[in-house]
Image (cartoon, rainbow over all chains, first blue to last red; front, side, top):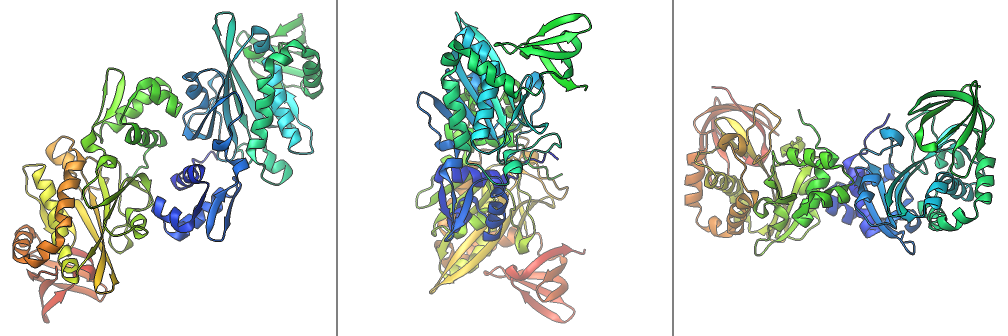
Length: 302
Length: 302
């Protein structure tokens, strides 16, 4: 059930993003909606956004309004609707963050469609990184998402190699990494989709809201992830901790898996992971190493 | 086929309304769309809007961009999406004009739904008028629409009492009048829906584009209508011309009709129309006069 949000909800969100607080009459006037229509749209939005109606005024809690998120050292670009934050980022300078409330054609890995409904966090970081930092990003960035989720709940999350964050086997977030060379450096695009306050439309997915039973101010999650991404060079120089942390969360370790990759299907038991995010697979034909960006999908067979 | 416009088309329109001219790269970046997606959305918009793509830049012809329409003596409010321009106007001061590109719940007479798809002119005038001017408005405002349409084509349009403008029996525009008293004056809401460059989804409707085979800059139509509405008090003082003009366009005159009104059904032949827009119906029970605002629908039976 990947329903498109109503134009009324999107218009109200756009208005709240720019004005933060409005009387019901102002909303009626701005959007040309009857009071009842405004209340209905507010009620729907309030399931996925930290908005409140008090004394005849609708407001959006600053901490949940990503248009107000302005981390030091980054240019931020907020859009209620975007085709894809990955595409929007392509035209921006490094050290840009693009956040959208709704993506028309959110991209997952290998062009798979990614459902990005209202209340989630759909963001792309574009940064310039050393090759070493770029290569550790495939473990450091999923870990940054895990850390942000854990600091906002009292549960433990896992990583399903290569790019999914899970809770009890259900997907809560995904990471999409793309890279371009520029001289000796890498321009890195890290696209994150985190099911925070949305209702993911798939049975195989969950959201922070479903797990903890309440809404989380998304800027808290954004700021934790952003500060970790900002320190990627630092982590690249002392990667042991990162790898240890990542490995401790890697549910895929020790499991028998089938991986679909560009070069075909591989079956084996996951023995290890290295600092570039490659897994070592024990197959019938011996040990094989697999790059994270080559894996189209991973399925457990045990 | 009253298809909702795509979010991409609406987003592109919003962008063009505020920026007027953008390179394809700027559109891609702003909307997070691939070049191909931008071109596809442009192509769709160009069927209903005077937009052009030249030298890698998309622009919207000023004369077709109602956000640039700023007539003297009026406050203008432009919205790409609105619930209804009638509702938006309710909260504004008199001498306001609200224009929307798309109405979610455009209202026709008696709460009937009015389909307002992209490329039409959906506008509400809110003005303060003397009782006499308010009462002549039910003939003067339809006539203003006729005049604007005729000045932008070389064909003749008719009025189907009480509030439709027609061409060869097909509806091209509709007028919705609502009034509130304020002391001795009237606050008048004149809602107009004019099928200019849109494709009306009904067989019983047509548009200026279908008739003349090309797009018309909508601000030309807006400015003719606005200048006539601005002079409503003047017309109220010398109503003979208005009535003569209106009568000459009134296709309903002399026809046998069935009118559904608040008081039930009436059948008869339309004998006359007066300066308050009332028709005189010759029925089996004698002559009866009918107020325009009481008529729910009118059907020809000859």
